[in-house]
Amino acid sequence: MTALAILLRHIEFVLACAGGSAGIVTTDGNDIQIDEEVSSFLAEDVVRGTIRAILARGSGLLVESHLLWQPYLDWEIRLGDLARVHEAFTDRLSIPHSSKHSRRIN
Image (cartoon, rainbow, N blue to C red; front, side):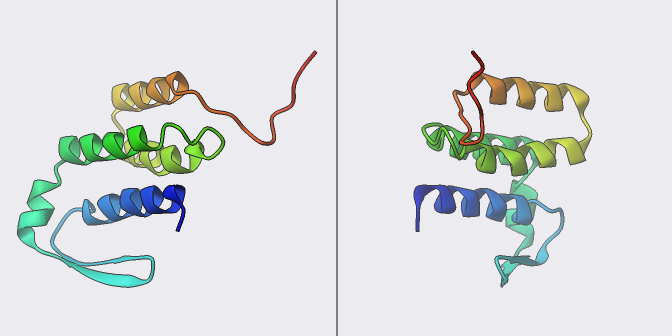
């Protein structure tokens, strides 16, 4: 398993567990029991900090970093706080990244 796959699974797991209440969460086809203690621990700020730490670990993945950032950006958009969404996009733009599909303009 690549570093990208591990980091992405970690982000998806955190977001799945942060879905709200305790119960069964399905991620990657696996059912995971989330108890009340974990659910209450994963407040928005904790989730945000955890995901940002994961994103920092993946900052060297120049071509693939968008795959890590997109679930986080989608989560911030779903929360609906425009200031946080703007901050997330600004943070994303400050991280060096590249694209295989970008073309050089002369």
